[in-house]
Structure formats: structure tokens, C-alpha cells
Amino acid sequence: MQRLRFGQGFATAAIVLSCAVAARAQDEGVKQVEQLTKKAGATVEAIGNTKVQLMKTMDVYNGLMADGATDRKDLYKKLQSEMASTEKKRAEITVRAGEMKAEADTLFKSWTDSAAAISDAGLRQKSQDRIAKTKASYAGIGTVGQKAADLYGPFMKALQDQVTYLGHDLNPSAVASLKPEAVKINEQAKELVKRIDDTITTTNTAINALRPQ
Image (cartoon, rainbow, N blue to C red; front, side, top):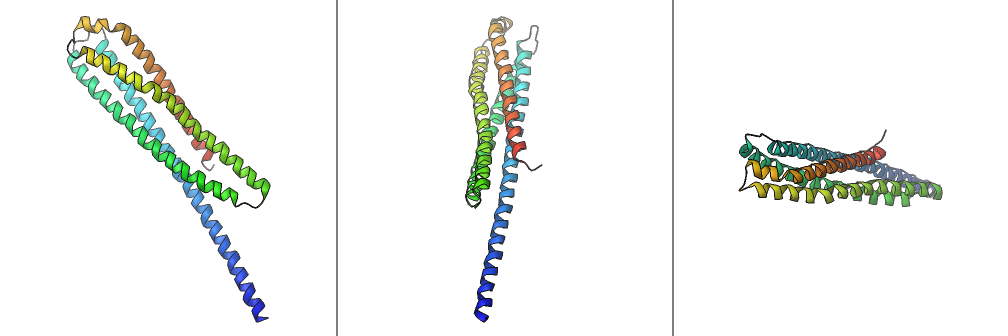
């Protein structure tokens, strides 16, 4: 009888320990989700800040290119400053996106391990399906984000070329000669802003799909 009670004690302790481990794993999973949504939110903020800065840059550019502008020297310097700020904001996106990816990798690994531990085959499959769906959602962020990045580089290069062109020839005739290029770069800026908005929307959708309601 004593041995039986002793064995029962071990069994009870094992069950309690197992439940405690499972609870800690669940708590850790919740924390990982919170961390990922936090990192994703910071990425959205960085993207939004870059959009605002880009629009400021274009406002100064269009002021410089406007007919009858009388302060082109000051506007030229300001444009250079705004472009540098845009590049810094863009670099911040790279940092925040990297942090978000690292957090996502951690979450998905933990989630996959947790799903594999589910004994019920049907429930295990449901969990794996949810993982696949969420992964696809986050992969969409990279897809639309890359589209914006693909346009950003050529846009900034074209803008820099115009700044270089005007560097030793900042007079009305030189500015007037850039009118066709000005139309093109404004069209590029408009498309870039659209792609930035798409990235923000996709990221927010991914965040909302994962965040507890």
C-alpha cells in the first residue's frame, strides 16, 4: 500500500509538472505574439514616417521647380537636407523590418513545435494550417515591401541626378529645362507613395490577424 501511494505521488507530481510546463509554454507563446505585433507596429511606424518625409522632400522639390521661385538657392540646400532625411528614414525601415523578421522566425518555430506536441491529429492539423496561413500573411509583407523598395532606389537616383544637374547651373533656364523630368519624377513619387500605402495596409492586416481580439 505504501509503495502504491508512493507511485501515485510520483504520477501526480508528473502530471502537475507537465501542466506547469504546458502553461509556461502557452504564456511564452502569448508573449511572442505580443513581441511580434510590437515589432510589426514599429515597422509600420517607420514606413509611415518615411512616407511623410518623402512627401516633404517632394514639396521642397516642387517649390524649387516652380515658375517664379525667387529663393532657389535656399530651396536647393533644403532639398538636399530633405533627401538626406528621407534616406535615414528609409534605413530605419530596414532595421525595423529585420527585427520584425527575427521575431516572426522565433514565433513560428515555437508555434510549430507546440503544434507538433498536440496529440489529437485533427486539432494538430488545424494548428498547422493556422501556422501556414499566418506565415503566408507575413510573407505578403515582404512581397509588397519589395515592390516599394524596387521603386524607391531608382526614384532617389533620378532625384539625385537632378540635384547634381542643378548644382552648377541653378538658374531659371536650367530649371525650365528639367520640366519633363519633373513631371516624370512626380509620377514616380505618386506610385511610390501608393506602394508604401500598400505595404502599410498589408502589415496592419497581418498584425490584426495575429493580435488577440
